[in-house]
Each structure stands twice: as structure tokens, then as C-alpha cells.
Length: 138
Image (cartoon, rainbow, N blue to C red; front, side, top):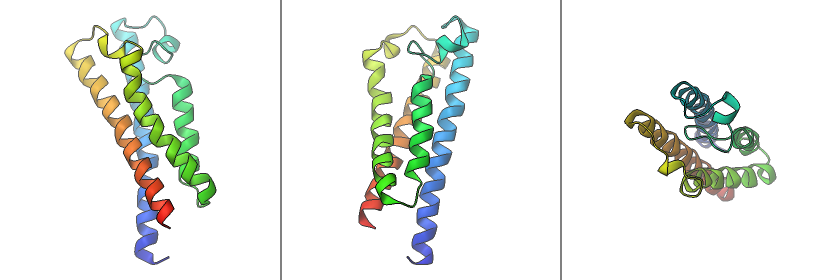
């Protein structure tokens, strides 16, 4: 592998890790916003299935595990982990249609935050998909 190719691999890995770190930070911030606005009664509710401005804790854990796998050197681990991380991004977007998240009564600022969070989930999903393509071409 050339030095340029190695730098690109490292760069995409770093962007994926940074993207998931950003998602985690946004999830915690969204839970705190939900809690302070009275959208959820407790922090665990704000990070659970009824969350409107964050992903549930199991999804957050899955994203961390998947990004660790997606950034491994071994393709047998990195390809499926990247593919699942890409699917998770799409599921985060789709879930709002089915769990009532997009129909929730939110203020303009809360709705903007929700849109930013869902967009970040989709962006990480796209990056993970690009990682799958890169890994399969290797």
C-alpha cells in the first residue's frame, strides 16, 4: 500500500471515529435538552425508546462497537462492521417515522436539533458505506 493510500485509510477511519464521537455528544446533549424542556421525565427516559432528541442507549453502544470494528485492519471484521454502521444510519432516520419522533410537538430549536442529529446519523452512515466500498476494493 502506498503512503498516499495509507493516509486515506487512516483519514477515513479518523473521520468515522470522529463522526461517532460527535453522535454520542449530540445524543447526550439532546437528552439533556429533552430533560430540561420536560420532553422526558428522567435522563434514562431521554436516552430510551421514547427519546426525541437522542438515540437510545443500545444504539449508542452499537455504534461504538461497530466503529471499533469498522476501523480494524482485518477486512473480515471491518467490512461487516462498516456495513452495519451504514445500516444503523439509515435506521436512525427511518425510526422517526415509526416511533412518532418526527410527529412530536417540538419547538423550532428542538426540531432544528433533531434534524441536525438525524443528518449526522445519515452522514456517518454514508461514511461507513464509503468505507465498505474502500475495503472491498482493497
